[in-house]
Image (cartoon, rainbow, N blue to C red):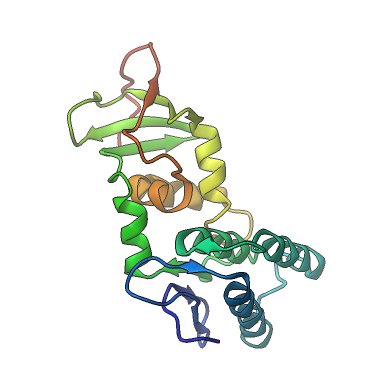
Length: 211
């Protein structure tokens, strides 16, 4: 495995593997670089992860690995590579096994247009504003979509890259709720323009509370 520094894989000890990317700014990775790291990742899983097949069958993991290789047949940015690795790692369904970007990759994701200026309350694919950092949205306002993408689709996209034990989606919902702006930038966001909101016309709801 080449000496790159893009992604840090966290898993039950003693797994600790660095995945590809080099340089001080976001690079473009070749298929060969990414494939090398994916094969190294699978070797680490096979040799060190005792619960690798606890929730996911061998056939499902092999299919996910093959799909990921297929998606990496063209050059990708570090962020694009990270998203694909995170989605692959989430298939293990282990809350202690997850892909984390290094600070540079995270900074690139968050700086493309800045973080969404909101803190939120999530329940069953519904998103309510708890706090708007720029004062543009009232607490309790329900947001129906961001950049034309429904909240349900945003949650699905984020959950597909997040790890939890077994099939526990509630844990992912709480994770996404706690760091919605950062997670959205890292795992979901595509647009680099000023964010657009679609909100409910029913007025603020009192259910938007962390209490």
